Each structure stands twice: as structure tokens, then as C-alpha cells.
Image 1 (cartoon, rainbow, N blue to C red):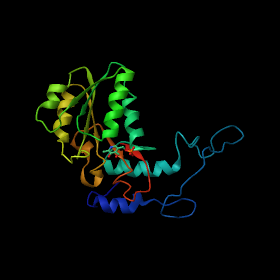
Image 2: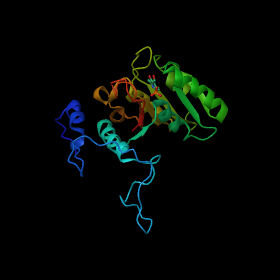
Image 3: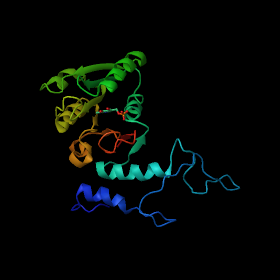
Image 4: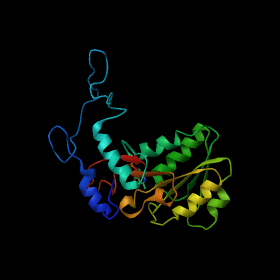
Length: 217
Ligand SMILES: Cc1ncc(COP(=O)(O)O)c(C=O)c1O
């Protein structure tokens, strides 16, 4: 359990006090295996890892750290920010209503408009900088997901997460926050009432321009 007195930066540097059980190394090794050994009774030798697409000890170390930083029950890493976002939208059913901002990462907004039209999801875009526009756009009992991005790419406008969560929850919807730009160092959307946090970890979470990844927490 994290010491509340420690800064986020310190907790990141400590990496949950990871120690590799085999070598004593303090950095988790990268496990490249796609498949994991079983014994003569077909039981998994590790007791857990089965197949790389589902689960891999290298992802688990990053996911635990991200869940801890976001104050989330759990976190999942994806092959890109777009893949993380698509996983949430594809969990909805035809006929569900989504509310998303007019200004958000353009690649995701364009995909969302096309995907919703092709898959029978209803989408309405709102102006996140206009007071009351989310209330006017949301449909109580029909809207399943409210999407916000803050600060939003490319205007860097800041959206009120707690107020958006209150509007979403009053209508029976869930709030997802694309927190790519803020990272958990600056903002923890779950503590402000959001239900899911999403990141393009390709950006500031990675910070070195050498990884494409996405996160849901
Ligand atoms: C705010 C935001 N969300 C999502 C994405 C998509 O993430 P990725 O490029 O990792 O698929 C980006 C990419 O620029 C972004 O800036």
C-alpha cells in the first residue's frame, strides 16, 4: 500500500518496490514468450500465465503501477491509445447513446463518428467549453457513456471532471476521461468521480517517444 506522504514522482520511481524473484533485479524483465508451460496434467506451471494475448507478466507489472497511480481497482494496457478507446466503445451495444466532445483527439473523433454510424450506436457531440451543453446533449436513461478529454488536444481547454461526472451519473451514464495530456501526476480523474480513465501512453506517460501503448484504468 502506498504511503500517502510520498509524492507521485517518488512512487513512480519506486515502481511498487518491484523485486524480480529469480534475479533480485529491481526492474521487471520483459517476458517475450507468447505461450507458457504446462505439466503432465495440463496445469499451468506458473499457475497463472497461459497465452500472451490475454496476459503476460510484463504487462502485469505496468498495469499494477498504473492502477496504483490512478487509484483504480485495476488497469489494462493496450497496443495503442486508439486500441484502448476502441475496447470501451466496442463494449457498448447497438442502440446505445454516446456523448462526446466536439474537440478531442481528431483521429479518435473521426473513428468514433464512422464506427457509431456503422455499428448502430447513437452519437451526439457537445461543446465541452459551453456551460450546460453536456446537460442539453445527454439523454437520461438512454446515454450509456459520456466521453471527455481534458486538457483536450489540440486546444488544451480544461474540462470540469467532477461536474461532468455528476451530469453523467444523474442520467445513468458512465464517464470516461481521456487523461493523456494530464497523466496521473497532475490529475486523477477517478478521485473526481470518473468511472474509467484512458491514456494514450504513447505520449507523456511514456515520455521518451519510443513506445506506442494505451491504458484503461
Ligand atoms: C489525447 C489523445 N488521445 C488518444 C490518442 C490516440 O493514441 P495512440 O496514438 O496511442 O493510438 C492521442 C494520439 O495523439 C491523443 O493525443
